[in-house]
Length: 618
Image 1 (tube, rainbow, N blue to C red):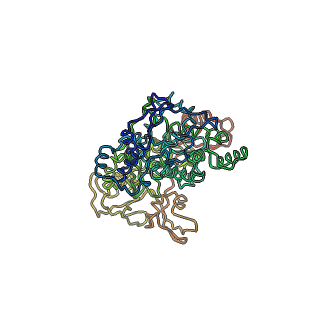
Image 2 (cartoon, rainbow, N blue to C red):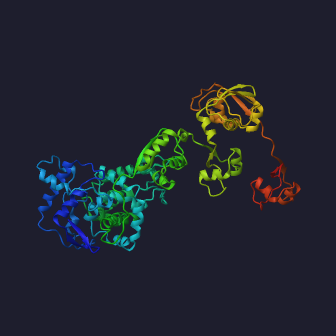
């Protein structure tokens, strides 16, 4: 076994035999220490026998000119696959029996087999692709030597992901270089986005993501999901490896440029050279897109540099060689900020682990999985069992219509513009027609959706029977009346506690008459709610339905029509010579008030015949 000295990739030194044996044994272990003791012993003894057959180790290596195909060093003639017996350490699959291992061997190996606490030690010496093609990517090595801080920053960002990625690489028996591909693709930024709409650690474009089962919708993008995207990317690379005659470099090129472009380059090369065998990546490199020409050498250079970082004075962030996160399955939709809060994880770390979720909650349709650092998982599960209210989603959707303003929307839903901006990540009050906002609502209102209130309707007056958990505040919010009015209706004091079974009168000032609607084909609770300006929850409550019920055409539904809103403004038709200033002065308003009420600029030009709304109260 050899190591670089003095930071020079062209200078080698020998290691003591037992040191080589120790490193060989250590590097044979997977991350999860799954190999049984007998297999570990077999690996170590086999490595010792393998090394004892070598009388000397190379002490010098000078890369040949890669542009001269006749001047190839023997190291370049190894198989392009990472499984070449000339360079790969024996694996558990190649050593079946472990026969011949004596008790004395076990005692010796007890002192030699250790677990690597840092993942870079686990990966040390395992980058066989980079070693096989040494000398082909020298120009790309220079960047990392000149910018030593780059890999330090990138390896810091890799902390939540790298152990999981490497374990998935090992499961598929792939070259270790594949675990470092997110460095080239996204610099380990889980929400990275390219100009070609590729996103995530692995930079999937939409079509390839769909091909590999990564859902993409308003709520969620599987291309940014840590687990799903990693598994899809590695499965995709394995398929490309098979389609490229078991050549990992061509598989990587296909991942970057698309397999069609690689096949075109191969075909063109064969025509130019009259060749019958499949060319290597280096043969067709100049025929590939410019980005791909550099893509594969960059990955090899990254791997080689990380393998020899200490020799070159490059500091890698220590990454623990143990699982960082665990996946928790939830039974229902949940608010993500509350999930982070009860788990004790910072919102920043929670976002790093769960970047696939695009909204403040998990999607309405499951499954609902979140990732948490392992040390926080048990606490979260315990709190989750205690806090059932976490599943009471405290928001509703509002599709922005032409003429909507954030202030008007906030007033409609009895909330504030600040709360809406915070929930939707808005920097200001500017909103766009056609977009959808999530509107925060009080938790008590959200709870009503889960637990209907007990009530009897008798015309415009209702009788409500108090049940566990009811309060004056909850009832006033539910029926959209103030607490003082509710108390006056029932001749009770505002501080009097409610008793289970107590009957309260609800006069429902918001509804003035009841009608019956016969459901037509294509109609639903949602379409009726929009038509009559009521909520789907109210429709379901009035007719003793669940919102998930399928309602057949011909069903008769009771609907309480809302009272017409009190007129808040009068209409004014603009005449020749009118301006905002003239009209505002005539109505004892400021120009700014009039412009804002009509959602106009203060410098807006008025046209004769245009209708302005004049607020009745300034």
